[in-house]
Image (tube, rainbow, N blue to C red; front, side):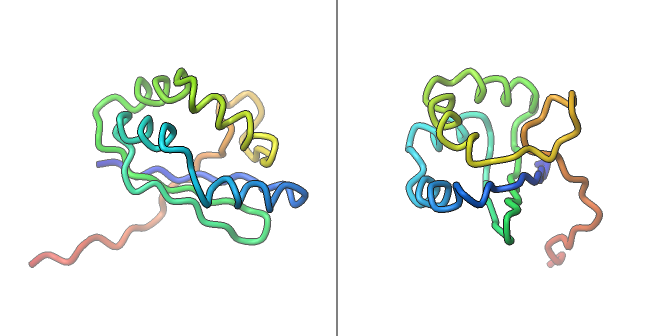
Length: 111
């Protein structure tokens, strides 16, 4: 299992829309994420920053990410959510959400 985290800015004028959308994420979007080996996907908010975290349980993250991007339901979802966000990723990096580097992790205590 691999952990992934990323951050993006939430446009203040779209905050209510974004929160409303995520109060009832479309089942097709969730199904695509699960099929792409994504687990425990969580988005946190702090001020105007969104922090996303998920665990990847597959063996080809790049291919699974491509599968998500090709899904028509997910593409429709992104047409609604992307205008709510402002990318913090480096220009030309190929990311919408800026990847974050893990600096520490408290693992489960051994029994």
